Image 1: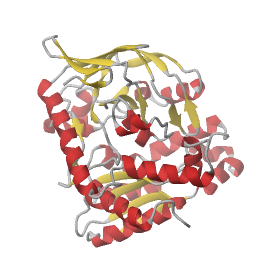
Image 2: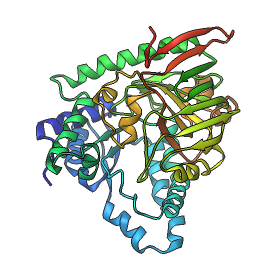
Image 3: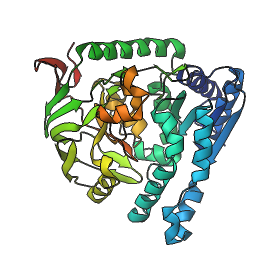
Image 4: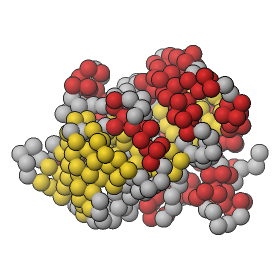
Length: 412
């Protein structure tokens, strides 16, 4: 299949993913997951991995036609099962030291016309079965990376007013630019960006805020931070000792909210694309950490199903700070892809927390993470609450406040 990205740029994208994002080590196995249409990039990733000394590269492909066949012809009970054996195997691979690389390259609206109840049931079954594979990821036991590749239906969503070929080329160019691989030295560009993110995270950790206060149109929110929380941004050292950048692109510094200490109202500033549904104008009210009221002008029924997934689904597992001037925001595009859209604006995430966002004395013990306010859930769904009209103040332990964001930008 012909790629909208040139061979030279595919090489650069793959090299950044393997050597900067994943930082694959000599002798380390690698597991890649990707849709079939991303094969041109996967082949380059595999080449780069072996050049870096990978002991074995194993790729698991998914096929959208197979996915649709399930919804068209599968029995009703088939939507309550998932391949636990596969996730158990993946979990063992990751805990045994394999690196994980996911290529995001699918049609965001693939399931838009499918039965919403079946989609919800299938997602829940998948989330339950996937826990053995996801646990080593959310606890950062191994180095991992997510990177993107164009998909024709994705491109047509982002660029609806041009031809199919032009849309694909525009999306390819956007991926390269936002992933910082369009310049002469992507490695240097990422090193500079990584340093800037670390400086922001270090400042926030020095401040040791107890909470953040958000104010703006439709938003008056006090978001308490977990006890012993730690702000993280850019590269991180996994428990296997490998420093990696999990998301390419990334513009965020993030940490863990306290699951019981979020109060007030907050409104989304961008639509949320979730499993074929575009959920627009989300507005929620929190009491003692839990969403007690929710609404959306479009996709409200899907939002409410998400919030009912389990006890932790209506609580927060992540809070992230992203300036309005980020490259993704300045592009003016809605990408229908959380990996991109979350890096356009400050955001929060419903559901599971990341144990990595705690002090060392806490993060390796699940019971301590829970006792410190970390949330547990089958889901982790980011949605955007930042804009050039949002102010954020940090509330210190003594109750005093420090400006953090003004009109969507860092205050200092």
